[in-house]
Structures are given as C-alpha cells and as structure tokens.
Length: 401
Image 1 (cartoon, helix red, strand yellow):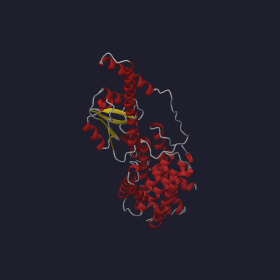
Image 2 (spheres, rainbow, N blue to C red; image 1 turned 45 degrees about the vertical axis):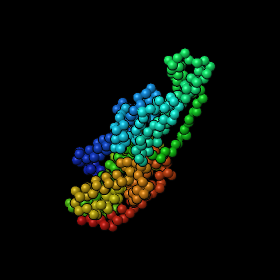
Image 3 (spheres, one colour; image 1 turned 90 degrees about the vertical axis):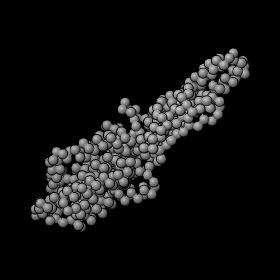
Image 4 (tube, rainbow, N blue to C red; image 1 turned 90 degrees about the horizontal axis):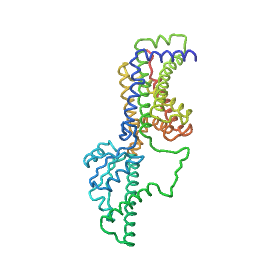
C-alpha cells in the first residue's frame, strides 16, 4: 500500500510540473461557474438583486397601470424593467428572460368601468422560472383590481347616502378610498403565516446550484479521462515497461497511476465545492458522507473511461483531444450546462446512457433535494457500474509496451 500511495502521490505532483495546468485545474472552472451562474440567474442586476427580470411594456400609461408596475417592483420574485412590446417579446424569444408582461391600452379604463381587462404575459417555453413570474404578476394584478373594486363599491355607497357636489368631489373620494383599500390589502387584518419543514424537496436547481454542480462535472471529468495520455506517453517512452521490471506488482503500478489521477480529481472537486459554498452560497454540506461517496463514484467512473480511451488513442495529443471533446460533449448532453427538466422526456431517458447524467443527478440530489446516502445510492451504483465496465474493457485491451 505504501508503494501504491507513493506512486500515486508522485504522479499527482507531476501533473502540476507545467504551471499552466493550474488554469484548467481551477482558474477556468471558477470563471465559467461565475459566468453561467450570472447567465442563468434570469438577469439579476449588478447590485445584488437576484429577482427575475420582467420586461414590462406599459401601453396604457394610466394611473392604474403605473400602480401595477409599482406593486411588481415590491415583489420578492420579479424586477420589472420598462421595455417596448417589441423589445419585451424579443427578450423572451431569445431566451434571455422567462416572461414579459404587456399592459394593453385601456387597462385602467376597463378596471374603472368594472369590465374585465386582460394582461398579456408572454412566457418562454419549458422555462421553469415562468411559473414563479406568473404567480407574482397575478398577485400584483389581483391587488390592483381588488383595490379598484373596493373603492368603486365605497363610492357607490357614499353616493347613495349623500350625492357628491360635483365630479371633482367624486374623483377625490374615489382616490381616497383607493388609497385606503390598497393599504388594507398590503396589510390585511387577517394573515396566513407560512412555515416550512426543515427538509423541503425541490425538483429543480437554482442558477448558482446548476452552475456549481454542472461546472464541477464538466471540468473534473476532462482531466480524469486525461489519464489516457499518461498511459500512452509512458508506454511510448518505455517508462511503463521499466516500472514493470521493478520488484513491484503490476497491480501496484497501475493502481498508483490511476490513484494519482483520482487524487487530482478529488482535490479539484473539493476546491470547486468550497468555492461554490463560499462564493455562490450553494449548500454542498447537506450530507458529507453522501457527497464523499458521490465524489468517489464519479471519479472512478471517469478515470476508468480514461483507461479505456488510453487503449484506443494512439498519441498523447489524440488522447487529450478525446478527453476534452468527450468530456465536454457528455457534460452538455447530461445536463451540466442546462437543466434536464426543460428538455423533452424522451431526451431525458436517452441521455441516461452517459455517466455525466448520473453524476449530475447524484450531486443534485445532495445539493438541491437534500438527500443522504440512501438517496444517492442508485446514482452512485450506476457510476460504479460504469467504472467496472470501463476498467474491465480497458485492462483487457491495455498494452504495456
């Protein structure tokens, strides 16, 4: 065991002989994690406002439409920004926002007359954020319409008791009743208090969680597969053959080479997890034991794939190209770059052939759904099965000279 660990540690240190390796080890993963977290957050502003951006095209420009926009600005969910109809619809079409609100001409007049006035909320297809935006818009619209109804009823009752002197007096009374109704709706005498269970099961990750988990899977899988280049390079230079001539078992030498790359992957994952927790506020620590198990299963599956790739590629440069291209492709298809929840069900089933899909599911079970060891055993088990198959094929095909 001491010899195995010595070989593994030596290979780990040799991986950083070229200082440029640090760029791929930590710098690029951190940069891409930050970029994707900001991109997927729905347009949060630079002042720390993480609410979903809601383009609002106010074509009515009335007092009531202005009140609706003001109520939306008080929301904890959306941040309204003024846009024209064309601009708002283009933002939705380009996927830059989850939804856009159009306040049509005549909105305020229809409410004042007691008629139905429809708002147009254009939503991006398959965007899980759109439901939260819709609920926020409905809540604000209900407050405006309920305030109008209450003020109108108050004016009618006051006029029945004593007619107003003129239209100006009627208007002033309506404005006063409207203000009182809005205040009561904002601070109702009866309230429903919502409490949450300690463990709330969510089905989708927020922007920070998706980015932190996804970029970990993307950037760690590539160097793990890159163990292929080490085997090819040492075989071409004859160092692997000379190592095998030493009084050390073949399994010790192979285990040391693979162990060095496993240490590399585990250290890289640990650093990215710490970064995600401290900088993005991602809760990676729900179950340390489950996290450790997922990290190990993920690392084993991809280093095993690297061993198999090392039996297919002919040169170190070819092995590196295969590691980068396969790692990026599987990460993208497996849900590391966008949530699988927004894809068709058929697609979600097809991509289960990739180990990245199971890695994303397992890490997301911990981070998003708060699962422990029992919850991630299926994903970890599948990854270990991938590792067994890849190691079996790789060792069967592996040439030592």
